[in-house]
Image 1 (cartoon, rainbow, N blue to C red):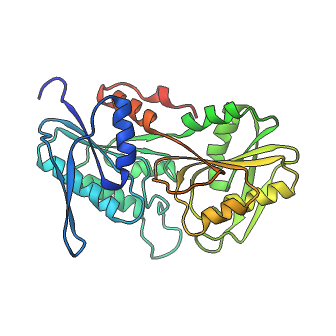
Image 2: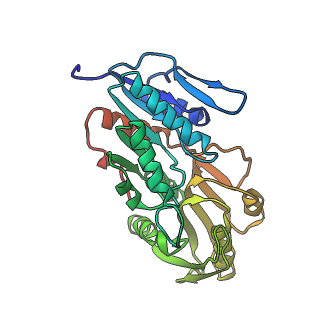
Image 3: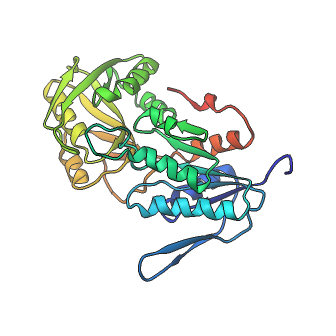
Length: 312
């Protein structure tokens, strides 16, 4: 092997919009690839240029449908069979990450299965952002670079210049993330305690802490139905909050979430482009993660520490 293997970038179909931003920021062109579609729905990705001896970065978020995950697996397999030196899966949004434990009998641990599938496909390294739970990194048998959108969100929150700022955790599981934000921003913190009897539906929510006269920012890893955040925002406004905003890395935004956001008391929701968005809302602000991923990819490729990219 040469001292420095060449670097090449490829992308899955649904994450091409982000891959083009990342490669533009990095200063290279996105590699050529294609997908053969069969009439029954089967598909076969193909890398349209040589990757022999190269460090290959394949960019693909694995949001639903599961075709996105399987396309990533097939592209990893194609690169390995084409004699790539190393294959790094860049997965800005890792799907199935909410299935990180057995919280009731006879259920799968989907996040562990995804990790095993990626390893079996031949991935050398995984790069992702704001996993639903930090311990998911331990499911992988290869190095995991876990990035945090806080390095994007914190400067944005600072630039708002909000007085009486309070950071809120949307649930008990989010207290670590919220505490890190509040310490860095030198602000107070409150916690939302929610009672959930089934997935995607919150039966009851209670605010632990004082929000009266405060500008509240709720921090979370994702927004799916937006039920928790909007219910919390309404309750906080009823409790005397001056304003309520939210920052969340992954905008899943399923079902009727967009309609509910427009009708809610929340004034702004800040998300990233880890998942493609097709919404037009004055309440939703999108920040790009492309520059951050390009920076970390460069550091990983050149065997440099990435700790300097972490704010929180």
